[in-house]
Length: 141
Image 1: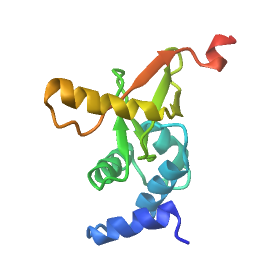
Image 2: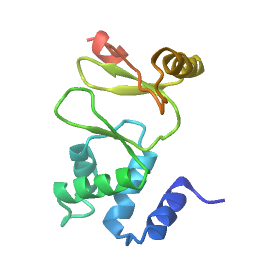
Image 3: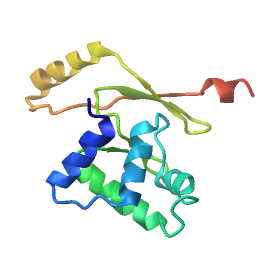
Image 4: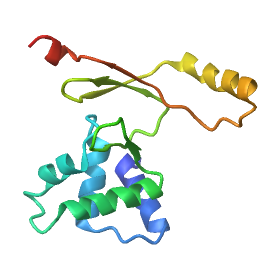
């Protein structure tokens, strides 16, 4: 059985993208991460193993992964985007103090798309929801 990384690598190859060791490492890091890392966090985690890798390399590969439909860019009003390789329908709880993002699922929200389509006349292609608060770690300080 193929892993998520293997499927993603095959998708890149099918697009004619050469899979470099750095590209493979960035993609694996994202697929294994549940923390919604920034490009800088990815760079800091991988730079000891890839000393010639730059932050620009990470950004360029993230852009490529977004275009390939392998990763989502999450922007929540702060200066740094976060990246999510979990493309399933899910939502995010965001800590207002430390920026931690936690995934959660709430299936009933799919009804919102139907209601919005009927009320607005739009062809709704999706929605995004996030809730804000203070995570357990920050609230216990």
